[in-house]
Image (cartoon, rainbow, N blue to C red; front, top):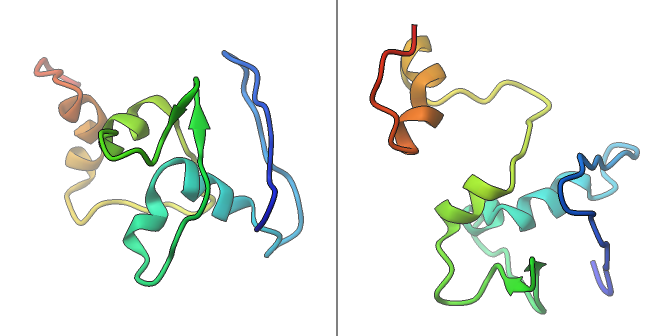
Length: 100
């Protein structure tokens, strides 16, 4: 992709709609640093969120993922129990109480 620019209003739910293969998931993966996991994937340019380059050296990808949510089309559980998958988000954000 080249020359992509989109301004997403703060506090608004935004969706990307289009045919299969048009790049929706690629854009979302770029926002969440998920392309980092794909060998050979490179990024040129900047990805800005609230004026901060998400790919700057001092940016923690885990913190980015806490602020920018993503819902997968197909379930993508971790290799854990159902209970552990459900509690995962709360646990990594420091919640230690009962989740039942």
